[in-house]
Image (cartoon, rainbow, N blue to C red):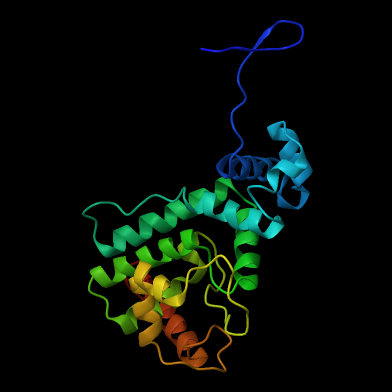
Length: 233
């Protein structure tokens, strides 16, 4: 093994190569400590022992950094439990997502803001949402009921409460995204859902959604649940 020596002759350990993974994991750790508002390229570079310009080989700008940080924390959500029924599988994944957000209290705000700004979520988030739709479908849900279930769950799928289905039709496509045909092939459940939903261009909760119906569906579902709890109390 070749040692690296300093001018004083002392042996030094070889520096771990800089990578996008290291940049993102360091950014997540710094955000956990001081919040995302205080995060800067300078602070990340300082923590990694490099000059700030070195970071831009791995993340082009602050938005790309934030998107990558979302991917890191979403990647911490547990995979579906093998052999579990749909209800248990969804519940455990959502609770795992909530535990992830408790570890990273800055994450809900960043997820919410980036989902509003991006035309589509990142590939990592799409993969997660696609798997959740797949659990409903494998559990026997019709595509229509799956659509409503995703609305009711909303951002609870990621551990907090905020509507996921913002209308992004007026935004330019993300330059880092594959063409629609490749997206459809890679995420078949999302494609199936998107093709099956009737579009309502005036909807404020997302293209393809009937605001009034979704509101009443969620309200009735909540009231039915409360009635059931009342009856069993």
